[in-house]
Figure 1 (cartoon, rainbow, N blue to C red):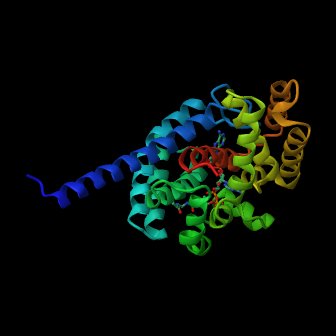
Figure 2: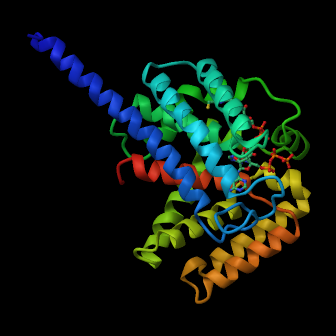
Figure 3: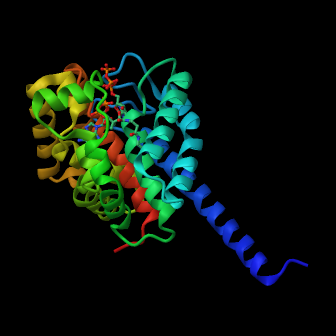
Length: 286
Ligand SMILES: CC(C)(COP(=O)(O)OP(=O)(O)OC[C@H]1O[C@@H](n2cnc3c(N)ncnc32)[C@H](O)[C@@H]1O)[C@@H](O)C(=O)NCCC(=O)NCCS
Ligand SMILES: Nc1ncnc2c1ncn2[C@@H]1O[C@H](COP(=O)(O)OP(=O)(O)OP(=O)(O)O)[C@@H](O)[C@H]1O
């Protein structure tokens, strides 16, 4: 017979295991929902590859399947209180698996980083309260993110140096303020505008994020002019009613075509949309 104390700890372990599985499943689902959202200006979706010549929905699906196991490892590492270098090692392994699955294409670099940190935070916080995951990333990993090694030739790192913006590391180190102050409120607003139409809510969140985020993908592909064009057009869409306006889908599709014509792709906003969906599913409601 198993003594009571031992059987309690087995039960606790089973709960931990199922929480880790739930975190990884939710992260992969958030990536799939981001992909299955249309229209998203310039971005890859199940409908078309947007501004990208080297990847499509199939590339993103293969990449999601390849990186999903690493979200489990990151959640476990977070639960064990692992420091940033340990998370970084897992993140780099996930990037390598992504490259194998896509033939070397960068589908999910930013998403592995941001969602990965949120998975680690969720691993440390069963039943997180509203706002808790971002706060934990900021408190536990913020300083190490800002002090970490810079990959000099990454397009984002170049854009950060050239244009003086913070990009993905600054967003994460601050606890994902764009996600909490812009992404989540827009998702909830979209749901109120179109009850039952989750895709409309995701489009509202995506456009609100494009209008707000200092996205290094927009900068490295479009320079300051492309960056300003993308943010201004997305801000106008939201200011004129977002998905509440009549013909919103036609307008969002026209914006999609205008981004493609300029080769613009707001990959940072796409990553933050996936992170918004993850946090929406994992944290308690305020
Ligand atoms: C920190 C990272 C993302 C570096 O980013 P960097 O700006 O140097 O350039 P890079 O071109 O590699 O990636 C930037 C990507 O971030 C996304 N992004 C761009 N702007 C933003 C923004 N403002 N906010 C959030 N994400 C953004 C885009 O998808 C973009 O492609 C990453 O490449 C890195 O260092 N990875 C190492 C692994 C790691 O530390 N993992 C931690 C745990 S998983
Ligand atoms: N649906 C999406 N469509 C396009 N990009 C996305 C999408 N979702 C996320 N992204 C992000 O955009 C980034 C890819 O952007 P991009 O193709 O400009 O790649 P790059 O490697 O930064 O630069 P380049 O290929 O131009 O040299 C990825 O890091 C990814 O996280």
